[in-house]
Amino acid sequence: MARKPDPVPVFESEAEERAYWESHDSASHIDWTQAERVRLPNLKPSATSISIRLPDALLERIKIAANKRGMPYQSLVKAWLAEKVDAP
Image (spheres, rainbow, N blue to C red):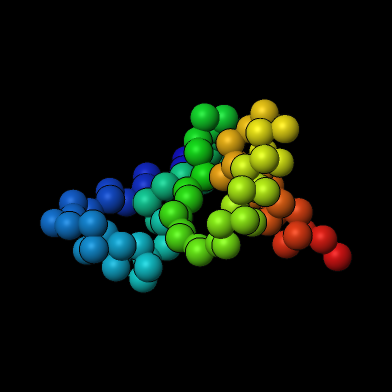
């Protein structure tokens, strides 16, 4: 017979819960043998907004290139940055 998992304590705040899970193993509270994989297809990756200064002429060239591709210029900049970061 499988051991019954320990109950999860009630926490006063998210910080208290975070501290608890940083110092305790979830295995005593959850029967991981019963866990199932799930897919979350609509989950959006987190993003951070940044601000950069570009020369006006460069920004215009980027907007023209994006317009030729039928996409927002911010999306084109993200795609170009991703390509450069991933390039060998």
